[in-house]
Length: 163
Image (cartoon, rainbow, N blue to C red; front, top):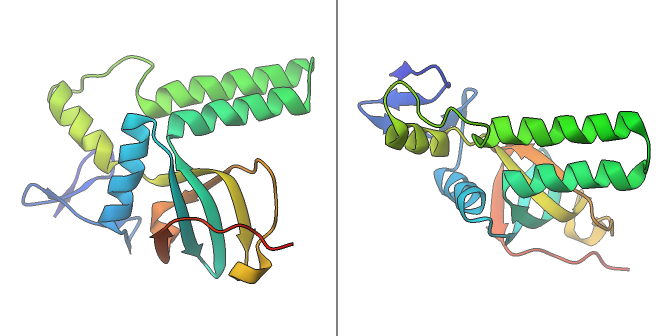
């Protein structure tokens, strides 16, 4: 098994389901890529390290845009907040490949395919977090980002916190 410069493990031309030494659910990665590429949102609940996170899986681009907007709303007119939000937007362009340099040394098509398998994080909005379904936090507008390699289990659909 060899690893390319992006940390994508290749075994006989196939991409493995490992990330950082931990097995990753390949289908969950496919769902994350679908949201990243199509801008779609899917209701999702994940279990990670004893915590339940439920909400809407979104694209990395939407996540970064919402993060920048949240900073601007929280600190209106603050120069450092504007600089931070601008930095988030710049990072989003770099992380999602929209800042140029789309083609790598092996050509654009292979680079795009490799980028799909490089997905390392889930991005969610409108999340509730808790140790159990009956103890979910009723937080409004919360954003969440988690490593694919840290997800213990997942299911489609989300839950509403109980009052």
